[in-house]
Image 1 (cartoon, helix red, strand yellow):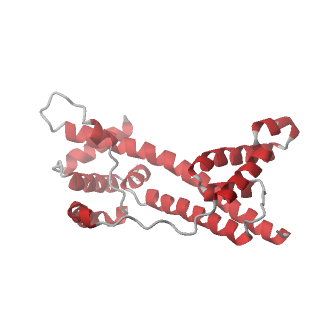
Image 2 (tube, helix red, strand yellow):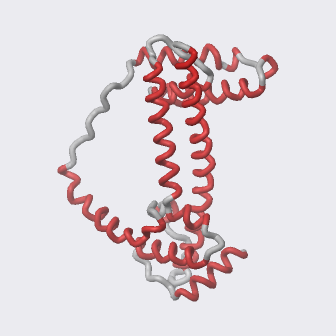
Image 3 (cartoon, rainbow, N blue to C red):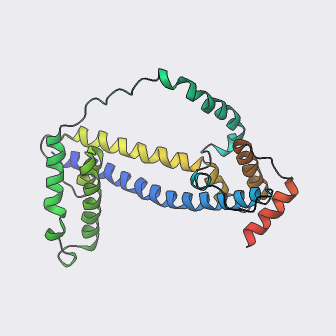
Length: 242
């Protein structure tokens, strides 16, 4: 493989690395926002119930709120209709077609072995490598050990590209295509996070009206009677200052 081709692969892998790190950071924030929204919602709804037990069922605690574009919260009603109709068509569903063009196991093994030769803990010491190179290899090791048992070719390609491993039988096009698919997956997940109610909740902490609309949307989707607006606003103020 020529230098220009290797550079394209390195540059694409760098983009994947950046979007992956952004995805990890945003997902951690999303979990925090999700828990905070649940905390407020369950406190709001439980206060309306005469039941002595104030703890919501485990399935409610663990259930995520619907992921929708906050600017289109009114579309939740349509989404609910679509969801309700899914069960009726279950028997008519066909099994998804098997993916074509799956890489041969030989390529998967060769990539994994090449990465292990360079990145195995027995073969690298932090004092023998530049710090940046050491942590790059460590990252490649983690990605490849997660990917190999699942025969995740895209993950192995990414790990190999990070440490500039190019094996015979895997072309520049194959490297780039797999890296681009991985980039697209992370980007799509980031978009889902950014257009979720949880994300809107977490990023609208300084706008009571926006948070009220979120609670309004959640109550509608969950089939819960919406308390008076003034009560929700007062609770939002207390929630933010507690």
